[in-house]
Image 1 (cartoon, rainbow, N blue to C red):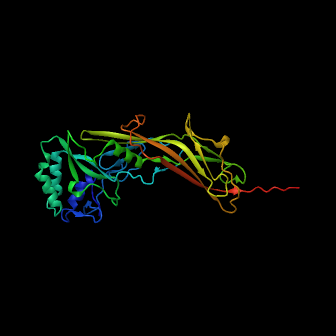
Image 2: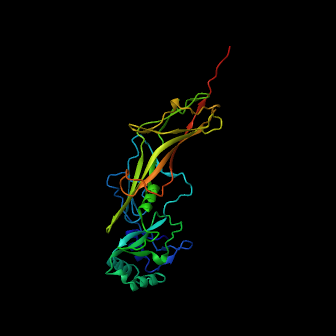
Length: 343
């Protein structure tokens, strides 16, 4: 059982729950409704490459009306994965308030969805009726939305304020109201980064003991940006996260190497960011063959992540900043030992 909180899910989920009444999910305090309502569609994102949909209301969207778009990740990338934060403690927003209803629409919603509801839903509907739904006032009702369908994290919004009234001239913003900073964090969480296009020389199945392993990045490998935006009932805002590759770190996958790890700064070229360790002062050199097995060679790109408060990736960077991102690659390598005969 889960809360139906998307634009369509609220209407469908609450109507399905009239007979059962509003219940509270133990341990979370979130109101939930009977049934398993779905929202959104599978029409895609207008030909643009979508970022992770984050659940919610369909491909390329989060919550009810937040649209997510991501730039291409480079022609050389055979695969992508969701960006991993370098800060293990960083988490994207669990929930936020998003504009949903005019006063007239909100009255219709409450009267329809909560008709015949039991407690505590009945008291909630009466509370809104006593407020006359703010009819005649200038503003909108904003409703709580969730990042995805896994409602197992605590949301700071209480069931007593599942919707809030936001006047046009709002004296003080609610701390959980949608902002460009919130959008930047949702965009970060939706960003997909390309797998590091690492090429080894000699090739991964032909490495040799005591011979340095040359590393390079192959092809078009450039920055990636993701824009999260909303344009609904006069509320317009956007944020764009920009991930720029800055360093490549490799790990031999065994202590029998000297050095075991090397880190290289990435250089901006005509076709994107690149590195070639041919003349670098650090190249992994294996000291022992892998025998009949392999070593797990690892590569990781560190991405510097900034954000703008618009749909323009080249706009001025905003604060507070976002943690660095990581994309990783691993392959099994075979290290051979070349025998020599001394006479």
